[in-house]
Image 1 (tube, one colour):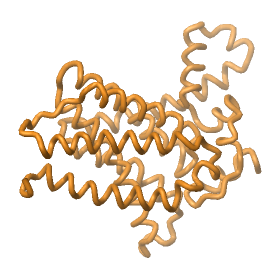
Image 2 (spheres, one colour):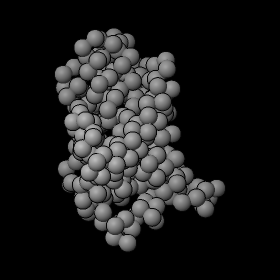
Image 3 (cartoon, one colour):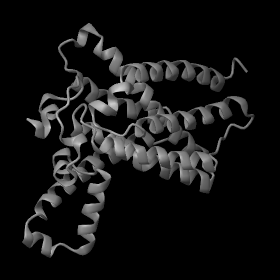
Amino acid sequence: MPQDPEFMRLIINIIVLSTVVIYHTQKHAPVYHTKFHKSTLCLPIHITTGLMESFRYQIRAATSDQKDILPNELDVISSFIWSWTSFVLVKSLRRGHPSTTRPPYQTAAVLRPVISLASYVFEIPGFYKLSIRALDSFGYARLAIFLLTHTPYLEKVTSSDIYALAIPVASLLSIHGSRVPGATLAFGVITAYVAKLNRWVTRRSREMKEPDVFFNASAFEKWLVTTLLHLGFAELEELRDFSHSKALNAPVNDDYVPKRESLANGA
């Protein structure tokens, strides 16, 4: 057992994730919901469901004689809860550079429950492994942000730039860790199209504020744009006009939020 790669991975992940979570909860979580005007429950639920899924998979992989691990109903439900909290959190994410930082989170929020459900229904172990490995981006990103922030080599680089770099790179690394052929490329391409979707929704939402454009738009397009706005698929500027959320509009003092975004509508 100690020589088993999955067992060693479990031990390493327990140490790394425990360190990251303890540091994160001690330093950031107590003020997160107050600073960013967010729900006090959403972030804990998001982290808990992700950790539960990850450790359930790794424990089974380390202790089971079967090489192919499949999700059960609890795992699939957990992935959907994780996805819902992801949408809630990323809708008002202002750290990094939102136009490039938010799409990787949005892509994961869309794909993880779909992949988990497909793995459960069609019994595809590789999909389940891919879904679980995607969760590793949480640890990768926080470790990268911590190390790069405290590296003298990058002392002139802003914290928001470091955050903007760490999130997409961590996402790609975690997907690559699944060793599913083509998954990393597919995730990168889909993320690019999600960013494009955000821009399209923003543009069409603004255009449909004109009476003539709104009148000529189809009922389906109106429904689609409104639904995507509710889910957060738009640039933050348009989401501010749409939701008037305090989490999007209030000034915020945070090192990882760029100056132009920290002022928001409170400038």
